[in-house]
Length: 223
Image 1: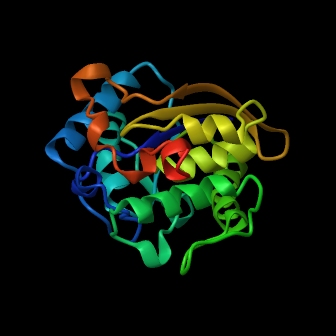
Image 2 (image 1 turned 90 degrees about the vertical axis):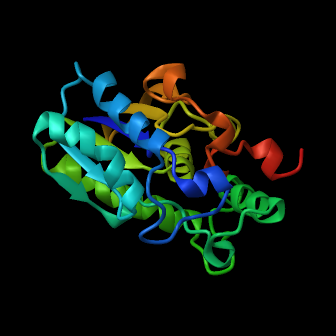
């Protein structure tokens, strides 16, 4: 099975640097819609059997151009939503962002750790596993999953044999950045691509306004 995990396009919360993880979440900006259109163009030659998005509206909006081009129905799943910020929801101050990113990439040492009101690493990885396992069980050959920066980085680090927690922590995904993996839930996963920059290139790039989920660990933990 081939998994194409794509972070959503830019939102107003990304521009504001806010920890926006609850439903329904912010909508795409004008640039975010341009990024979504670029995703569809970039994947023009890719075989795609199913398209998934999280329950947050930004992922569904990012999927729209690809769905329109392929004539596929969107499969919305809660399991691939962003990692909850808990009591830090909608904060954008440096202390909150450091705590959020630091907790997520601290799961490599302590997956039971959680933010107040948030999730543990085990809980996040299990819900993502469930969606991937569902697709695999249905015989999906190539699945595109429109998801979120922090959860894609975290899940890939624990499930891909060739991606370390350190790599995930220090290599963010910009809006519409992508990770491509092949494998299966039983045999494991191998990452063939970690593209941190937006699909579509510089024309749709705004790395200064990617939001907290694109923060590298050094900033988050104060190194």
